[in-house]
Length: 569
Image (tube, rainbow, N blue to C red; front, side):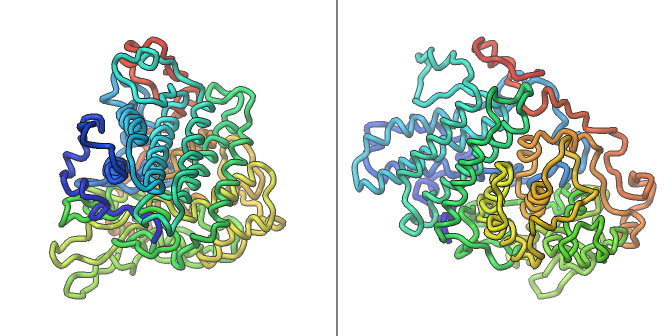
């Protein structure tokens, strides 16, 4: 249901290109103008080419090859090698080929938007495809903003003769955000609403949801980076936080979306048609189109959850594990899920879980995690999330067609609650229409503002928060774990104290299940017997004066001396 991106059917244009050709597609201005951009159908075909750049959050590489779980190499999930950590780069890239300072997409979408007024046809169709163009320009700019902050605003198609733009300085980040939100407001005014818009297309509600996401990002960035080299002078982010709350609430009030009944089943489907929670998703067809989502090819894909991540899950009584009498400890993998938030069981593998259902109906059960060797889950906490145990008879392998959720309704509920809490206007009724819907779906007690239990294990972000904000951040990490949001959250919260508090650790090694998979000599352990895979690396040594933004390639600054380098680079 809703805006489903279907590679197999989205347009004839998709059927004319191979996967590799698509990834190296030519700019849209290579199309003969005399023959194109004359009808609404032309606009649809052209704008379809941008859909392949989704999803919106930071999924790692996915396609034909290795694909790690989103959020890999953060404080919640880690990869196999310390050198792959998300904070492991401090060398200024030399040119755009070894960085992400790429303006190809902005140039292409600006060309598309320069042509939309030439097309003729049904006005509602023309509006729809024009609105999609503004949506994608906002998306591309947001992606660049997260990495670089200040950006040159280029709102028109340019050529190599347009020196005004070619040598343009960077505009302040808040002006860039205003430009992005303006594009989204234009898109919202042009796009149709579901169900008037075909379910595989971007619609008004999705644009509102992206607006809420971006406004929350910038609002919290400006609040927590205030007074630093990354802040915006004179702004505490409150105006953006209000925009985030209002945009999220408008989608909530539309009544179009609602939470799916079962949390765990959201993430291992090959077809999400009819799912009321999913605003946008991507479907794969490995056999038909040779385009696959390879999350399970090398399972567990060098991906495993951290001890810190598991400690975020409350006991079933709604209290933190640090104070709840129901918590049974974490020294036995087979009981670690007992009396815990059921989302934990939907996230990690424990003995007795189903690993594989063969095409003949036979079942293989999980005994212990793979903690050494190729594709190892080095913390001992393998992922249940995204796991489809069914073996395809045709290939005798796990499916390569697991759908990707690009945006879902639960995120909007979290945006609304966080924005209101940051503004200091959150009420119990606000919690009841947001956070408590998520907790109810999970089978957890409601969050009551007046009776929040102080958790001695609340994370140290380098500053204190209100009790309700601690719990909203906890809820976000638990609900959205492994979905590609964590690095953005850590950066917008200015959470370097949390980052530098120590390297991620894993499960208790002397658990009878885990210990059978490796000898003591094959793993690193801390003094308490927990897996410590990055023990020899010391700490992240995150530099808060530098690492919140990426360095602009040095060759780009040579080409355009009006570009100023980011702080510390």
